[in-house]
Each structure stands twice: as structure tokens, then as C-alpha cells.
Image (cartoon, rainbow, N blue to C red):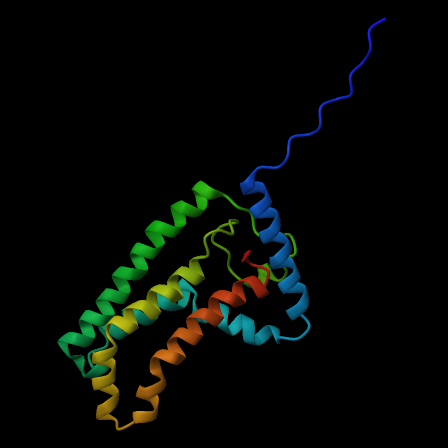
Length: 183
């Protein structure tokens, strides 16, 4: 008589699978906790502020408008660097999303209101774009400080980088709270 041995236990999930599951649970929990509290229009405004469909026309318009930033060479260099940074961001993030192919959260609501270029969640194009903008503005802070000082608005100069970094961080976090991305 042949005795049957019990089936082997299922393999434990890989470290990557456990991280993805944890990330999914945390993201869903944040979405669920903040959804009834934070106004949708505020999160949607942040989403639009980091959108490439606003960024590229705005930068191109400022570059082509002859009176933008008093048309100094330094301001044009800033705008050109923002434009180049935006193009590099697109060239890196787009293909990276298609290589990684992490789907958007299943609770992703109201996406039909937005124009989605792709179905992939990671990495976030909005988050990378606002981080790139904040970094370039930080690197050109002396130029911005000089420009704003001409208008005698010292309070704005004092808090400019706090505002920019706060905007970038809040916009990136809003992507999770809208259900567009995972943490």
C-alpha cells in the first residue's frame, strides 16, 4: 500500500510581490480615508497643474511671447531648460511605464474626465514633471529672486521655494488620493 504524502505548501510570495501587495493596501487605505474629506476639485486642480497638456503650451507661449520675463537671456535659458526637461521627462517616463506595466488602481474613478495617455500607473508622469519643474526652479532661484525683487515683493521671494516644493509634493501625493497611482 502506497501512502500519499501531503501536498507541498505553496511557495511563499516573493519579496517584490509582498512589496506590491503592501503598496496596494496602503494606497487603497489612503484613498479611502481621504476621499470623503478632500474636495475633488482641489485634487483635480493639482492634477491639471502638473499635466503636460498645460505645461508644454505654457512654456512655449512664454518662450514665443516677446515680453515674457522682460525677455532677458537668463529667463529664456530658464524657459528652454524647462522645455528640455519636459521633453527628457517624456522620453524617460513614457517608455519606462511601458516596460514596468503596472496597472492603475482598480478604484481609479473619474478617469474618463481626464485624458489618459496610457493605462500604466508607475512611474507617474505628473509627479516626475512637477519634481523636474521644482528642481529647475530651485536651480534658477537666484534669477527668480532677482526678477521678483524688481517688483518689490520680498514676502513672495522669501516663501517662493516653500510654495514650489509644497506644490510639487502635494501634486505628487494627489495622484494617490485621486486613485490614479499607488504610493
